[in-house]
Image (tube, rainbow, N blue to C red; front, side, top):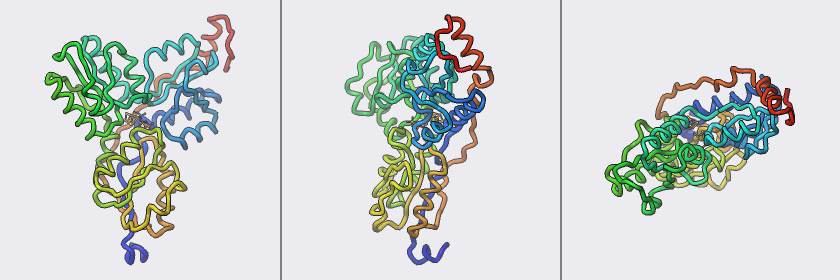
Length: 338
Ligand code: 10D
Ligand code: SF4
C-alpha cells in the first residue's frame, strides 16, 4: 500500500473479468488477419464491435466501415460484424458479387439457430432485446413472421400471440440479466405456458462482467465503465453498478472524458470495461486515477474465463480469387480488388 493510500484510504476496485470477450477478440483478429492476408481495403459491414477506439485503429490499418451492403463495391471482400446479420444480408452480398467473411460471434449464431428451430415448429417467438440494436435486427431477420421484439418489462402488456401454449422467449446476448428476468417473469404471468430457451442466450461474458460490477457496486461510491455509447453490454454495466449501490456510474470511451468533479468525496472508485473494450484503455484510466491519489488497486474477481473461438472459416480460403471470380462470372463490371 502506498503512502498516499495509507493516509487517504483512496483505492480502486478493478473488475475481473472485464474487457474483451472471446467473440470480440475473434472478430477483431479476423479483421487484422484479413487485412494482412488480402491487403486493404477490407470492407466491414457495421462496426466490427461497438468500440470507437477499435474502429479508429482498424480504419487506420485499411478497414472501411459501412452500414449498408450496397455501399461495398462489387468484387470486394466484406466482413460481417460480431453482432450478426439477417439471412437477407447474405443474399445482398451474393447479389452484389461480394466475397464474405462472417465474424458473427458463435454465441449470437446459437440464438439465430434457436430462432430458426422454433419458427420451424411454428412457435411465436418473443425476442427480448433493445429496439434498433444490430443484433436483434439480425436475429429477427431469421424468422420475421414468427418473431416479435419485447424491449423490457413495460413492453409485455402489448404482446399478443396466436396460441398461448406455443410461445418461447429468446434474447439478445448482452442484456441486463436482472432486467431480463423481470421481463420473463412478466411474460410468464401473461403466458404461463411460455417456453424458455434451451440454454442461456445472455452470454457468459455479459453475465460475468455484470457479476463483477455488482460485487464492486456495494463498496465503490463511483464506478467508471470504459466503453462506447452504442455498446449495449457496456451501458448495462453502468445500470448494474447503480442498482448495486454505486452513488454514480459513468461510461467513458477514454480517460480524458473523466470529470475531476466525479471524484469529490470519493474514497473507492470501481473500474470495469465492456466486452468490446481493449485493456489499454483501462490502463489509461488507472493511470489517470493513480495521478490523483487512487493508486492502490484491488482486483474484484467474480469468475474465471478461458473460452476462445477459432477464426471465421472463410479466412482459410482464398477470398481474393473468389471475389475476382464472382466479378468475372457476371461479366466483370465491378471494381476488381485483385
Ligand atoms: O452493443 P453490444 O454490447 O451488443 O456490442 P459490443 O460490440 O459492444 O460488444 C460485443 C458484443 C457483441 C458482438 C454482441 F454479442
Ligand atoms: Fe459473443 Fe458474448 Fe462477446 Fe457478444 S458479448 S461477442 S455474444 S461472447
